[in-house]
Image (cartoon, rainbow, N blue to C red; front, side):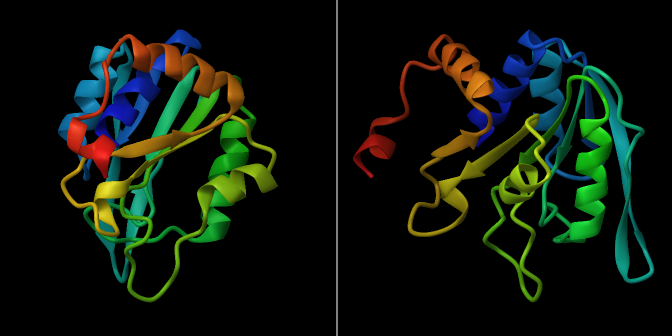
Length: 178
């Protein structure tokens, strides 16, 4: 998933994305480094507890930007309400070249409430500028193998394949055997 995020942000930069909105609580060093190496301007948005929920102070989305999210959120475990996600997707859809990037290695780990499937939601809302990054190493019998995949529209995946081909030669041998 880490390589998938890096390739995704590098690819979005080739599409003209110039800003990355990143949660101030989460896997920040990697998000920040990947965005910086991709030439993106970095803006942190606030994540803080309020009463019995976590408040995500999302920025006003804008043209040529991407918003990194995950649900369940790492490390808080907060699962976004479907209505909030729908509103976020609609706002992004109303901005030219605005992308939502879901880094979702923990999508299969939750206690009570099942997270909304973001890929299905993006299709339902006819939102094409959505990318989901999944890791096999966080569920099932594959911990530590560092294997995963990226889901998105055809144009994004074709260009991401080119970026990936020129960034990584191949996955580790152990991952290929598994």
